[in-house]
Image 1: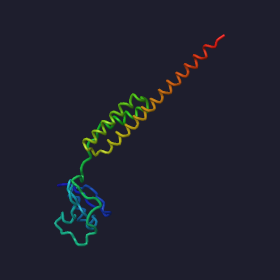
Image 2: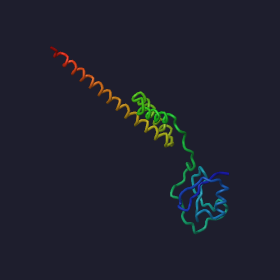
Image 3: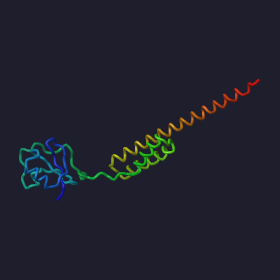
Image 4: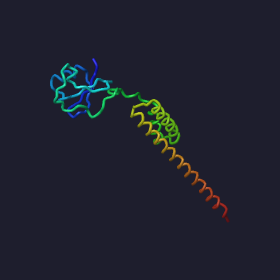
Length: 171
């Protein structure tokens, strides 16, 4: 038998539960008056009582849950995209030890992961968040590395100029 979502006393979707469990809940009076149910993957809600051959009573407490069921009810989350995990890991590594050496690949993999998420219409929120964190960490790491190089070269040039001007004024 199939699994079903049902509406709780607060009109919020709950479940999914197996059909047998839903039937037991109905028989024991554990469901709210006028509770609705939708089979996983269904497009419409229906009164729970109608699932068990009973006509819906006229004293239904409400007619629909706060969300409209779609064919996506109970849809499993899309697969995780490993590129997003790599972008995140390299973005963190760029802060810890590797600077731009890990920041550049983090940015590349982050953009690749976001592109794949968009192209596949992937709904895995974790992958998107990790890819964005990897991108931000990578870009910031690259920016700090460039700033550090500019400061090192700038102070090196200034030190060299100061050393040259000081060496020519001997006895």
